[in-house]
Length: 387
Image 1 (cartoon, rainbow, N blue to C red):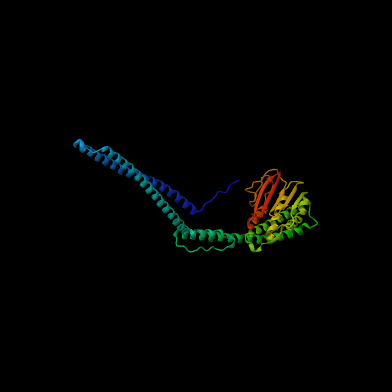
Image 2 (tube, rainbow, N blue to C red):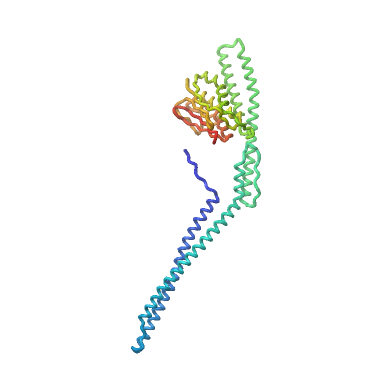
């Protein structure tokens, strides 16, 4: 299970890197300033000490030339000078510490001011970029409408907007061409398939058909039916994204699921499958009725089609969850490919067709989440309505 990495805004990254760099500069500059002040004070104290020693030396030399009754008591002067030196040393230390504190306060104020200024300027500079992100989040190619970006005089953002408009214009053009081709191909195929089906109906009613010919006609009839369903599903799949949220309504899901079960009842009995249901009453959800019914029908058809002889199907409906599980091959299917169109399962003689792809498209349209798992020898498809 991949864990989602935590993302950070561009502004946060810029401010955090600026803060780290500024703190490093402040620490280095504070250390340098402290060392410089300390060296200067030590130099001044050393000079004072040299001057004091020189003055005492001169006084001692002068005292030696005087008669005994006129001699000066030098020891007292030395003690006074020593006391004065200690006081000067403490005063210099206090001055140095005070200067260091003032320096740190000034640096902190400069740092906070620059951080606020940088944040304001960055927000103002990145405003067109954030607005562009909002437009991109709200863009839907199904609307076939080119987004309009706000005017900006920033060269890089202007270039970005022009590149995005060019890309969107090309994507919308390709989307329109693909949609038109799908619709045209589907409608063009509908008529010849209907004619072939009618002709086969007439042919199968002929009394002089041999057993071999009847088998061939029956095979053709089956394949044409498959092509008709495939054509219908392709057109349905292409039109899912064209539906709008205005078509959503409050639907009684419990009744809808029970109605879908009635529709597949004949197929279920034909395959001799047991159906186990746990349907909560009065489950409602806001959805497109046609798409929801198609999703439920496709899930049930898939559970019947890929079941094993005399297997079972379990349908569980809760307020926010629909679970359809079935027996089948005792092997977990590929979660990465199971919802792909015409995915071929090598363990089976036929692929999954369009059913599960349609189910996933319907879930994406409504903002639901569908998940496949293999538990207790059951293939489980769970749709969460509150994603």
